[in-house]
Amino acid sequence: MQSLFAASWRASLLLAQLAKACLALMALAIIADVAIRNLGGRPPIWTIPVCESLMVYMAGLGVPYLVRCKGHVVLEIVVRGLSGRVRRAWEGGIVLTAALTLLFLAGVAAFMTVDAIATGDFQVKAIDIPGWINLLPLVLGFALGAIEFARYLFVPDSLFERRAEDADSL
Image (cartoon, rainbow, N blue to C red; front, side, top):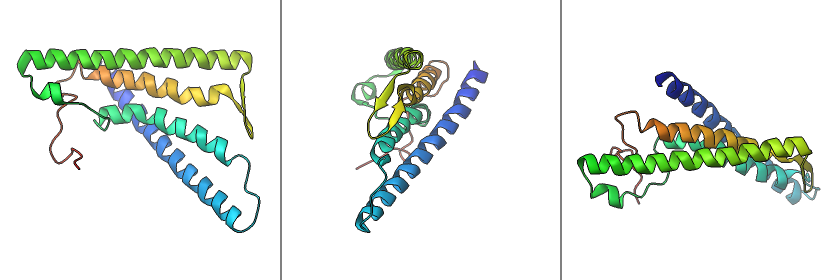
């Protein structure tokens, strides 16, 4: 089990780096588009559809890293009021539900990806993009996210425990 979690962590780090690269590419594309417009030129027609795809990539590829680093949104109000076995059981139920939900969504995205490849589906916008291109990061991110959530069932670490200096505050 440890080797699976170690491999998942390495893959999560790689996907997080890809998500960061997507953000950088999107920023550069938008800057170039705006600069070209302000200089009186015609910007590339691919900026908006590519940026839409990059947003899907950033969201899908970032899931497993955020789960492992506890960077996702957590509602702790019920958990804080519980202790001992009841708290551990409650956390286990939440983690299991999250892992199964992500696994289901990864399966749906995988089915849609295979279907898009088999049918040759294209998203027709300003440029033609194969339909499976936008689905693949969801398959990867959701599947690894499910593994990262499930990891909390097997390690002593809690999904809800964060050190005060790590927690975001307003």
